[in-house]
Image (cartoon, rainbow over all chains, first blue to last red; front, side, top):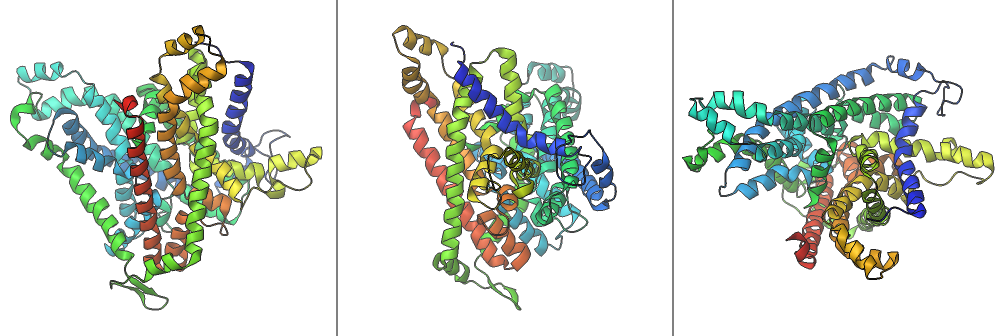
Length: 268
Length: 291
């Protein structure tokens, strides 16, 4: 295969710079020592990170987001693992339709989901509650949990299970001691990817969150609507740090390229 | 659940999927149906929502030119975003694919990683770079005397398209990248040995083969851009409304839920039709690639 010419490398450099610049600028401005938006040219300062402490609503929103992400991804897995095992192992009528239904939250615009959940939970008397947020997030992260678990269950070596059965393992023991450990990398990556999706979601959550159940993206969005100052950049830098941590976890357990490559065919 | 359960009949898969199925019917299909119903209800400033069946909201959307203009703006922005990602993302994927192993995976990470970073943070970056007199790029260019007044970016459609293209770019690169993986590099060498120049190779060999990847990437980018909320809301502000921000306003500011539900239903139906339609077209046109 031929190598890239100088023109191609110039294009590539500009492309990468433009892709990274907006994210980098947020992280850099977060360290500014000035009282206004500027790059930290006169040394770095943590003053805007300390300022976050004076805004309890941001800290509260952070814990809401963290708890919501962790819980909803875990609950999504409780539903997704059995479903993934069924879809991976059995050929049954309605299998394709079920898989399409389970992946459908990827195709439905989040603004439509937000409206549908707002209508539903308000009439159910759960409007603005944390429980409503959790259930809604279970739905939107479900496809990610399902997809990675499904990939692990499909690629699993079934002869180990047969050996366990021949040695007298019953259903539950088989699942707990053999199947689950074998698909665990997929399950953990599914959890991490689901967590990131839940932690970053704004469009759907903005419809459901009420004061007290506002997540960090929602709090940041509402804050940006009024004014943009270095405070939101330091909060954004923290959000990016949490996402990066989950990314590293994903990369360790699963390989980021596989996760992302799987995410790309949502349109098919 | 047993390893040799395939013969145990058709009950096991249903038992395993039943919890998820009940969850999806109860908390996804029913709310969606309720939203469609809601779009036919009546609403008044003082009486609130009245559960009757009327076409008032749909008539308003069909007759008031405000909605036609808003939907046209939504789709115009989505189309321009899609074109921009295709024109820049496809060559970039091709260049990436020709890099050597370590650089390839490094830059793939750099370009795809942002996919998982908060859209609010990414859009905020654009606002910091180009936001009025305080925008860092504007300040820099003005101090050099390159421009007199700040580049118009915030509250413009151009700004929305650029920021959206940045948010959506990873999807396009990924999709073209996947198409490139199926491509046999020997074909390129064969073309070269037969005397084809680089332009001919790209036009006659590479382009036709990655086109399905570009098109399926375009479908993803288009549908996500047409329903995007965060970027249009932050860059476009309250003046330049798109379908998602309008529905948000109807629900949380005006409180006219039935009208907001009608806008959302229309957006959903339009997107499903466009996505399913163009998917069918692509699969027919490129049937041999998908086989």
